[in-house]
Image 1 (cartoon, protein in one colour):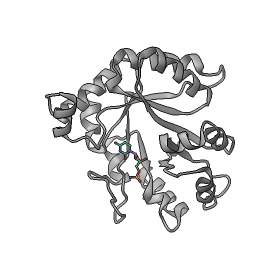
Image 2 (cartoon, rainbow, N blue to C red):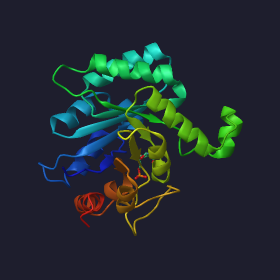
Image 3 (cartoon, helix red, strand yellow):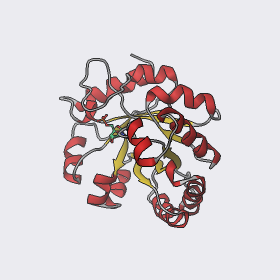
Length: 238
Ligand code: C5P
């Protein structure tokens, strides 16, 4: 089956989403990442609205709280019918297990349980900051791998990570473990504020399971053409 790049819907309002979607044919069913900026602005309605148009949702809210609270929050997230959602691995193995439990409790009978992935170290955290702020004294890389292993231990489906970390993480985890990678840039497009980018073709080659692409599609002159090109490259057809 053809894989779709997940589009980062980094928009400020439903109004902006509606304007963006006018570039796509009505029957093109997208996979949209909704982050906390948009979710806290528009609420669950935005998820229901996009789902009712046939789009799939990765709800990127990065939960991190005590296990009981996260479990109950995840029940609510599962009821929204999203495909993927996430937590911070720093919340701990017990919290991640509780999150998974909450998702399974909240999922309606005839629906699939959303995939649950963990954020390891944020890409905005430098090794120096990690040492100073979190008092974690190993390398950033080791910390990322450790968090991936904790996520696997908790029974999560995978992690969000840099495409440059995929091979190492896949080397340490089970075969089904998912690496979802942002920071994707087709050749010749603007890198923006991303530091370590990778093309869709290379991400495919090294074994990313999902790619997240924002501005190369949302800011493109022709978002639909850009989306199709990235999708082709991601599927090894370009
Ligand atoms: O526009 P761009 O393709 O850079 O968007 C990437 C998306 O992935 C943004 O929503 C960004 O917040 C998110 N993201 C990221 N790096 C991470 C985690 C999430 O770029 N490590």
